[in-house]
Image 1 (cartoon, helix red, strand yellow):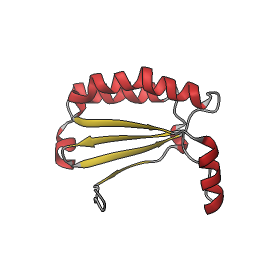
Image 2 (image 1 turned 30 degrees about the vertical axis):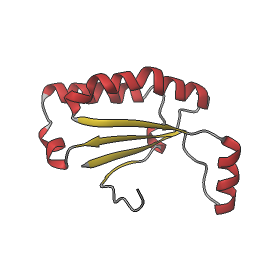
Image 3 (image 1 turned 30 degrees about the horizontal axis):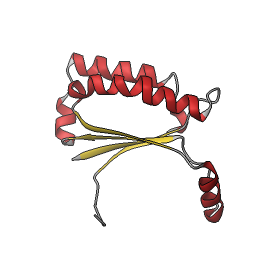
Length: 121
């Protein structure tokens, strides 16, 4: 199993609430509708909440400002992803990227592929 983790920052003109509402109510259904075409087995949105607690936690570590949310997408394998190069998959990927440009600050939203190593649970 391979996982894509995408740490999201909103575009500057959006409030966190506007960003999260669009992500949940508009973008999520687009992902769900294209999941089979793209080989997405699981899609989870983690929405940042508890602003006061986050600020306090960041202050104790001297860390940077956090994210507005994290998207996690699971795929069967790197090989399965590499073999998913048809026109339908390319079109679905373009549609999702076009929509992401409407609410995500892509230049400041890192993403990466990984393999989970469960330590507890």
